[in-house]
Amino acid sequence: MQFEPAFLRIAPGDTVIFVPTDKGHNSEIIADMLPAGGETWKGKINEEISVTLIAEGLYAYKCLPHFGMGMVGLIQVGGDTSNLQALQETKIPPKAADRMKELIQQIG
Ligand SMILES: [Cu+2]
Image (tube, rainbow, N blue to C red; front, side, top):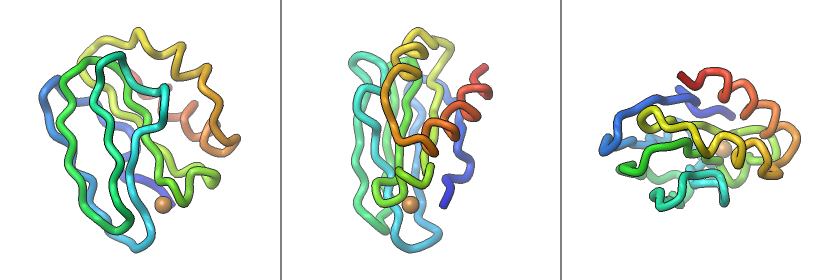
C-alpha cells in the first residue's frame, strides 16, 4: 500500500510515469496540494498514467482507495518550495498526514 519511490525530485518538464505493479491502485493529485498553475492528474485504477510537470513546486498525490491508509506520494519539481505551507495546512486523513510529514522531510 505504498508508492515506490514515494518521494521524487525532478526537473521542470520531466515526465513521471506511474506504473501499477499490484491491483487496485491509482494515482491522482490531492486538491490544493500543488503549485498554482500546476498540472493535475487523475489516473484510473490499475492503469498506467504519465504526467509532465512544468510548474515548479510541490505536488502531493494519493491513491484514492487507500488514501485513508496513508497511500500518498510527493513530487518536488525544481527548487521552488513556496507552496510547502499550503501543503501542510491542507486537511488530509491522519495516516496520510503522518506519511506526508515523512515525505516532506526529504525535500531538498
Ligand atoms: Cu492504493
